[in-house]
Image (cartoon, rainbow, N blue to C red):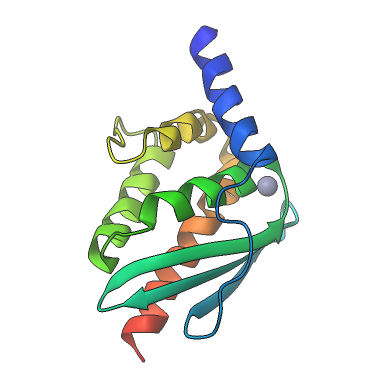
Length: 142
Ligand code: ZN
């Protein structure tokens, strides 16, 4: 299917050339999460100033789904308020449930929509987004 090919290309592009890979200086929240069923590991760092995500970077290892998702997530939430970032995370959950949602803010994310047909991979795709939610929580409880 042509659409699937396009989606696969977007995913592989993020996997091979991840956006925002690396670490941030001090003054950021760090969240380490892993997905033992697949062996995915991610360490997400965010700098949140006045409830705005001014920077987001990650390091990690794992499958193409988990790492491309982290690449897309960090790109999508940069410059967003924490509220907007959480709204995006919730929209991503809806996408993983097979709901018909679009990401006008960052269309690449839609490439992961096919993952909902493979329940075992949903944890791969949501790993980075769970790290985002935990990071915002951590920031708000500080
Ligand atoms: Zn995985």
